[in-house]
Image 1 (cartoon, rainbow, N blue to C red):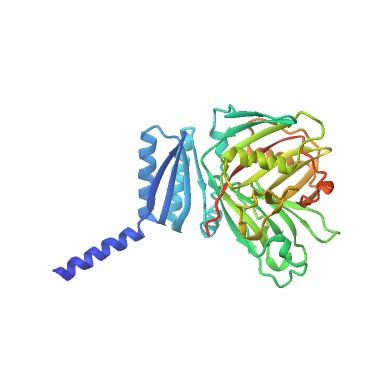
Image 2: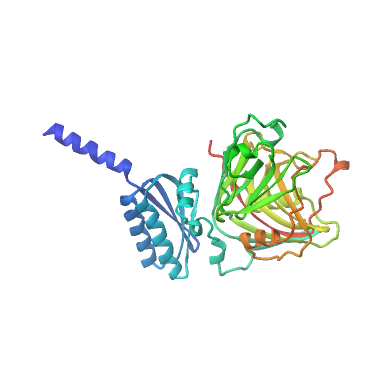
Length: 384
């Protein structure tokens, strides 16, 4: 009898390990449901029960954190689609964050792009800024979006360490749904072998990936995530940050000379109070508009595995930023949506993609000056 009892106890423990574990966290009008374990038929029932209880309590806005899911079955996919449609009918929002690479591939093949590309900002109806910041040369409004974070993933060596000969360097596919911000060296193509002579700097934000080959006779190109038969983004070097944004700032300069990227970086770090933030920035700069993304932080507190360089003459800020440039067009300010803003930029010609650097010599500071724009940002946590 003791042996049988011990076997039963062991089986119970194994079932606990195999079961999907759920953690709930409330943040404003949003409910974050974090999943950990196997998302199979049993896990599907567990999630659906949790969602049903949330809806009965009046909850309509749900973020599903998938970062702990190690297995996804057809039953799990069906549960995602069913709950998404149910909440959509209630005029709420149901979207995924922290989706692991292999789970993301399964969802892509299942055609569930609406779950991966949902814009959580669309569900907000209280668009008043949490704070207005007035400085001598410019002013900004801060909108609080959520208590989200960005988790980085590193591919290969940082851009500045990659040699020009990339023929023998292994590359990886980088998914770029709207919940991912990424910069690096890579190319768009259907097979890695076809990308070897086309590598260049790339930027991915808002569900669009763009790159400019190093070869001078090749033009920049871009693709929109989840289009039918789109090329993949192959990277030999990449920093990808997955998650959602906690803040949006809208800024405008009072004087014509504008502000530098380091000024906006200091503003983001000041607002967030964290050592490092990942960001997407759209701004007017003279006769062009830029879309920039990357990471910035306090030099003595940010590591990011060698990906950052000094951003200001005092070497107090470090970061890594790529930017895409477009012909001038006036940008909407205030509370705006990331996907719509990025998509609007790509309606114009893609002129160039560069790595933004600021020399240490104050006399040689980058001429890039930002006049007005918007930036989405969130804390970056490097989970080693």
